[in-house]
Image (tube, rainbow, N blue to C red):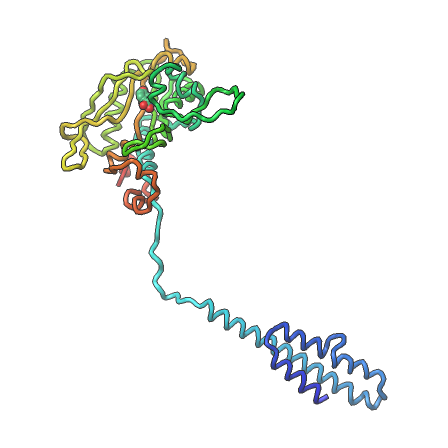
Length: 357
Ligand code: DAH
């Protein structure tokens, strides 16, 4: 019995992990364990022998069981200690500098434009970026042979042979949203439609995807005078100046009659742009009185309703206001550029709170 005891206590002491302990336990106390077998021998002993051997074996069994439990606990402690040592970290170290994202200038300017026109009673409308050539061209009085159609550098969607659906394009301007919104809501209507547009063009001032905001105001007696007032109010609010000179230049668009392109007075002194002073003029948008055919195509009776429309380049006016020289950088996702030109995420532009403060 003493031999068994010192054998198993020795094995327990030497066990290096839980699996080894389990092996020792099975060797001693498992079904075929050495001590279990000895206990089975008790049945064949004389009562006197059994009286001595029984308690002794039971005591041995208890002793080994508690040695096993103690060793298990000790191993667990060691493992925990090791883990704590490995996962230790110095909570007194200074924290890493907080890196917050920024609002892209295009998003910022879209919000600014929306805030200004919302104040004048314009709702925001949206349309699909992939549209049929009917909405993008024909409904806007740009028929198949019209040169404007070629000038737009249009991306056409691929069509499989035998596909009879009307041709679809990546919209070349936000003007198709005029048609879709009038179809849906009729007149009177007052909306702006900011969004992405696409043309196959790429240089310092052109990217194949860019942004426009369309404006549309239709009622019974809306005139060019209302257009001029709205645009003047817009430009003053947007550039955050008290006075701006706007120049309306006669122009041509198939979807407006008469049509005007609008320039703002500015100066380029020392290579920096200043709006509202100087002798230069900068084109910012196209506009005009909505052509009767366009109203008709959208299901609005041109004998009853009339109004103005305009289309402005968002990227363009963002470059002007925030002095961003190269349009392509807008879409490079260069983090240094984004940190420099981006806006704080919680500074939502409002007219009362300041647009770009
Ligand atoms: N759709 C024109 C373009 O992309 C811009 C434009 C001009 C829109 C005159 C209008 C408008 O609504 O009346 O060049």
